[in-house]
Image (tube, rainbow, N blue to C red; front, top):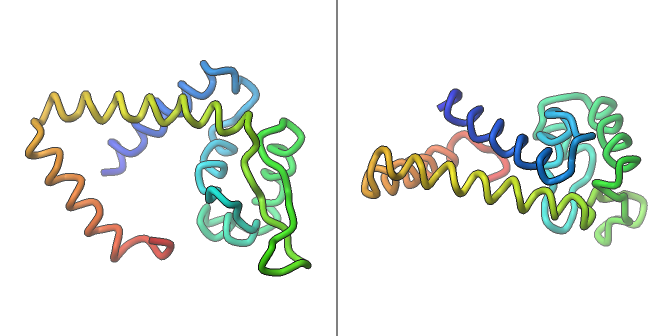
Length: 134
Protein backbone atom coordinates (compact mmCIF):
# COMPACT_ATOMS: atom_id res chain seq x y z
CA UNK A 1 0.00 0.00 0.00
CA UNK A 2 2.87 2.35 0.82
CA UNK A 3 4.59 1.96 -2.55
CA UNK A 4 1.33 2.43 -4.46
CA UNK A 5 0.44 5.47 -2.36
CA UNK A 6 3.85 7.06 -2.90
CA UNK A 7 3.53 6.45 -6.65
CA UNK A 8 0.21 8.32 -6.73
CA UNK A 9 1.68 11.11 -4.61
CA UNK A 10 4.69 11.47 -6.93
CA UNK A 11 2.51 11.59 -10.03
CA UNK A 12 0.23 14.19 -8.42
CA UNK A 13 3.22 16.30 -7.40
CA UNK A 14 4.79 16.11 -10.87
CA UNK A 15 1.47 17.18 -12.41
CA UNK A 16 1.25 20.15 -10.05
CA UNK A 17 4.78 21.22 -10.98
CA UNK A 18 3.96 20.84 -14.69
CA UNK A 19 0.87 23.02 -14.10
CA UNK A 20 3.09 25.86 -12.90
CA UNK A 21 3.77 25.05 -9.25
CA UNK A 22 7.52 24.79 -9.82
CA UNK A 23 8.14 26.60 -6.53
CA UNK A 24 6.24 23.98 -4.52
CA UNK A 25 8.18 21.35 -2.56
CA UNK A 26 6.86 17.83 -1.99
CA UNK A 27 6.55 18.56 1.73
CA UNK A 28 4.52 21.69 1.06
CA UNK A 29 2.31 19.80 -1.38
CA UNK A 30 1.73 17.05 1.18
CA UNK A 31 0.58 19.62 3.74
CA UNK A 32 -1.59 21.44 1.19
CA UNK A 33 -3.35 18.16 0.41
CA UNK A 34 -4.55 18.06 4.02
CA UNK A 35 -6.43 21.38 3.82
CA UNK A 36 -10.21 20.97 3.92
CA UNK A 37 -12.38 22.79 1.33
CA UNK A 38 -13.52 25.38 3.89
CA UNK A 39 -10.10 25.69 5.54
CA UNK A 40 -8.21 23.99 8.34
CA UNK A 41 -6.49 25.20 11.48
CA UNK A 42 -2.70 24.91 11.62
CA UNK A 43 -2.88 22.70 14.70
CA UNK A 44 -5.05 20.24 12.76
CA UNK A 45 -2.68 20.33 9.79
CA UNK A 46 0.21 19.59 12.13
CA UNK A 47 -1.61 16.62 13.62
CA UNK A 48 -2.52 15.24 10.20
CA UNK A 49 1.04 15.66 8.98
CA UNK A 50 2.38 14.19 12.23
CA UNK A 51 4.63 17.17 12.76
CA UNK A 52 4.94 20.00 15.26
CA UNK A 53 2.73 23.07 15.15
CA UNK A 54 5.90 25.13 14.60
CA UNK A 55 6.86 23.09 11.52
CA UNK A 56 3.34 23.29 10.12
CA UNK A 57 3.27 27.03 10.73
CA UNK A 58 6.57 27.44 8.88
CA UNK A 59 5.21 25.48 5.90
CA UNK A 60 1.99 27.52 5.91
CA UNK A 61 4.06 30.73 6.00
CA UNK A 62 5.99 29.54 2.93
CA UNK A 63 2.80 28.55 1.12
CA UNK A 64 1.20 31.88 1.96
CA UNK A 65 4.18 33.83 0.59
CA UNK A 66 4.00 31.77 -2.62
CA UNK A 67 0.28 32.47 -3.01
CA UNK A 68 -1.04 28.96 -2.42
CA UNK A 69 -2.87 29.57 0.86
CA UNK A 70 -4.38 32.40 2.84
CA UNK A 71 -5.23 32.74 6.50
CA UNK A 72 -8.80 33.76 7.25
CA UNK A 73 -10.76 34.16 10.50
CA UNK A 74 -12.36 30.96 11.77
CA UNK A 75 -16.12 31.59 11.89
CA UNK A 76 -16.40 29.13 14.80
CA UNK A 77 -13.81 31.00 16.89
CA UNK A 78 -12.95 34.62 16.14
CA UNK A 79 -9.57 34.27 17.84
CA UNK A 80 -8.47 31.43 15.56
CA UNK A 81 -7.44 31.39 11.90
CA UNK A 82 -8.13 28.90 9.16
CA UNK A 83 -5.69 28.10 6.39
CA UNK A 84 -7.54 28.09 3.10
CA UNK A 85 -6.43 27.26 -0.44
CA UNK A 86 -6.24 30.09 -2.95
CA UNK A 87 -7.36 29.91 -6.58
CA UNK A 88 -3.74 29.22 -7.54
CA UNK A 89 -3.65 26.16 -5.27
CA UNK A 90 -7.02 24.93 -6.51
CA UNK A 91 -5.83 25.21 -10.12
CA UNK A 92 -2.69 23.12 -9.59
CA UNK A 93 -4.68 20.80 -7.30
CA UNK A 94 -7.13 20.11 -10.11
CA UNK A 95 -4.23 19.08 -12.36
CA UNK A 96 -2.83 16.85 -9.63
CA UNK A 97 -6.24 15.25 -9.07
CA UNK A 98 -6.63 14.66 -12.81
CA UNK A 99 -3.29 12.84 -12.85
CA UNK A 100 -4.35 10.67 -9.91
CA UNK A 101 -7.53 9.80 -11.82
CA UNK A 102 -5.41 8.82 -14.85
CA UNK A 103 -3.19 6.64 -12.65
CA UNK A 104 -6.20 4.94 -11.07
CA UNK A 105 -7.54 4.30 -14.57
CA UNK A 106 -4.24 2.62 -15.45
CA UNK A 107 -4.47 0.51 -12.31
CA UNK A 108 -7.99 -0.53 -13.27
CA UNK A 109 -6.83 -1.53 -16.75
CA UNK A 110 -4.09 -3.62 -15.15
CA UNK A 111 -6.11 -5.41 -12.44
CA UNK A 112 -9.62 -5.24 -13.93
CA UNK A 113 -12.73 -3.37 -12.90
CA UNK A 114 -13.95 -5.89 -10.32
CA UNK A 115 -10.64 -6.00 -8.46
CA UNK A 116 -10.36 -2.22 -8.54
CA UNK A 117 -13.82 -1.85 -6.99
CA UNK A 118 -12.86 -4.42 -4.32
CA UNK A 119 -9.65 -2.51 -3.64
CA UNK A 120 -11.54 0.78 -3.28
CA UNK A 121 -14.08 -0.82 -0.93
CA UNK A 122 -11.33 -2.44 1.12
CA UNK A 123 -9.43 0.84 1.40
CA UNK A 124 -12.60 2.65 2.56
CA UNK A 125 -13.13 -0.04 5.19
CA UNK A 126 -9.53 0.20 6.38
CA UNK A 127 -9.77 3.98 6.53
CA UNK A 128 -12.51 3.58 9.10
CA UNK A 129 -10.06 2.00 11.54
CA UNK A 130 -6.84 3.76 10.53
CA UNK A 131 -7.70 7.41 9.80
CA UNK A 132 -8.61 9.46 12.86
CA UNK A 133 -10.01 12.18 10.56
CA UNK A 134 -12.24 9.86 8.53
